[in-house]
Length: 125
Image (cartoon, rainbow, N blue to C red; front, side, top):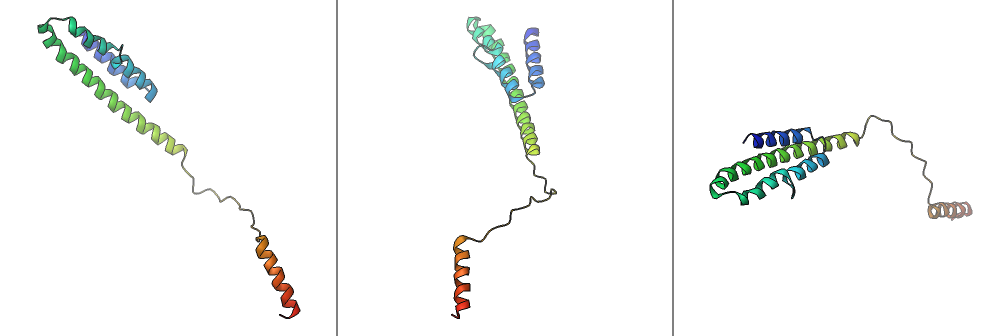
C-alpha cells in the first residue's frame, strides 16, 4: 500500500514538474503507456488470487484515474500557457507608425487614353 502511495505521489510530482506538453506526454507514457508503471500493476492483477484482485483492482483504478485527471488538467494548463505565449509574441503594436507606401503609377492604358484625349483636344475635337 505504501509503495502505491509513493508511486502515485512520484507520478503526480512528475506531472506537476512537466514544463511542456512534450514532457507531460513523456510522463504519461511512463505511467500509463504499454510498459508504464501503472500498466505493469494492472498486468500483475491476473496473477493474484480473486480476493486480492478485488482489493487491489479498485485501488489501482483509483490511482490510474487520479493520474489521468492530473495529466488532463496539467495538459490543459500547459496548452493555455503556450497559446498565451504565442499570442503575445504575435501581437501587433498598433501604435507603431505606418510604413510609407510607394507612390502609385498611372496604368499604361489610362496614360495612353489621356494622351490621345489631349491630342484630340488640341486639334479641336
